[in-house]
Length: 199
Image (cartoon, rainbow, N blue to C red; front, side, top):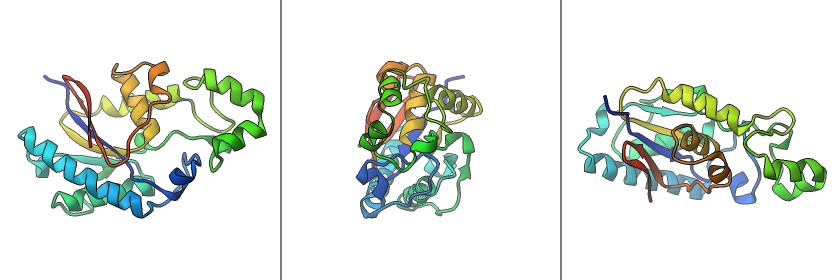
């Protein structure tokens, strides 16, 4: 049986994204640009699903439980002509937890603990801030989620979970994925013929 295709959308921009603050588990709402990006991603999704000969009404939709992902999902679904609320939530898609770093910018983290910050720059996949998760932890939980998927699926989640899924499925290495920008307003298609971004 062929592997399922995942149509993956990162949530739209929040004010913390715009300010360069790490969000992690914090529930920061979409800003105006984020809502525009979510609607745009919905348009791209509709075109891709039609191109692939699939019926969007028959695809399962699943989101991270964090509000920015849910709001993005609801705008995506409205854009493709579906009810806003017809989707599932899965906690395994939540963003990587940054622990005590949540709410801080990179310069603030560097100033607070230069030695740890320098070490994490070289060990990002396996080293977490106090109270946080490693990318390796996130890779395990998104792989566990993926292993339950039996049909083509639309997922709305986060940049960190996108990087972890890329590594879990062999499209990137920890070294190449850890600082990879994940675009808002785009659709990443994880499929049998590789990983492609559409925006």
